[in-house]
Amino acid sequence: MRYEEYTIEGRNAVLEAFRAGKTIDKLFVQDGCHDGIMNTITREARKGDTIINYVAKERLDQMSSTGKHQGVIAQAAAYEYADLEEIFAKAEEQGEPPFVFLLDEIEDPHNLGAIIRTANLAGAHGVIIPKRRAAGLTATVVKASAGALNYTPVVKVTNIAQTIEDLKKRGLWFVCADMGGETMYRLNLTGPSGLVSCNEGDGVSRLVREKCDYIASIPMKGNIDSLNASVAAGVLAYEIVRQRLNG
Image 1 (cartoon, rainbow, N blue to C red):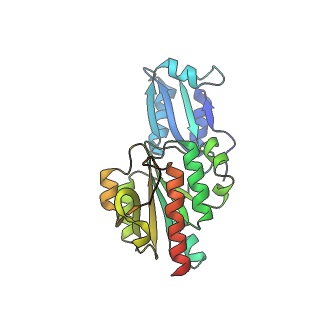
Image 2 (cartoon, helix red, strand yellow):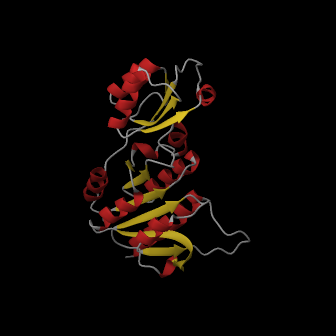
Image 3 (cartoon, one colour):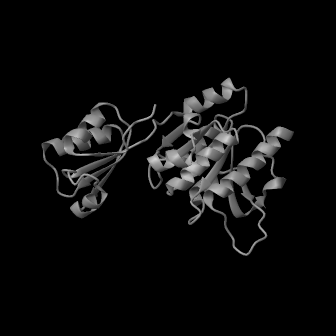
């Protein structure tokens, strides 16, 4: 289900959004605002495990498009998030072993949208993103996905490393790209699989890297040493596609 608004401003509007069941990615609250209605808003936010950021009034002024934020701005998802079971149901419906993308701290909404688009075209059954230190399903992500969000479930989880452990118990094997890994052409990437993509600036976090079954390196012959996150995800994804087609 698509939501019409992305940014919601004003105390009553934000409270009504929570009570109407809107998916709120982040809540920005002015430092020092702890009156009755603001406490109600933050209580509703915690019920939905929404990230709450306490910021200076100047920050809210910069974010506001109306100038009437009343000390609170909510960032609503442009699309509703799915749950993990939807991904498995999609794979079963298509008669295929599950194939998912797990994104580790992808903060650029253009990259997130591009990766969701690639995931759809590569036949992935869903995309998993973390709640913190990552872009949510903003209007920019929707545009960059070029319609892929209509077909590709996106799940938001609290902990990527723990989610990998949980999915391993359901038979998935995980691969991430790293320069120190084995050349991707030498790996067996068929079967139920998860592709871990990361923020190109910091790379895959140590904990997530340790959870992966395979570390794949992408051959590069140029003068620089890294690919854009969405491009790297696409290259590795299509090696998985190639192996599935030839398997």
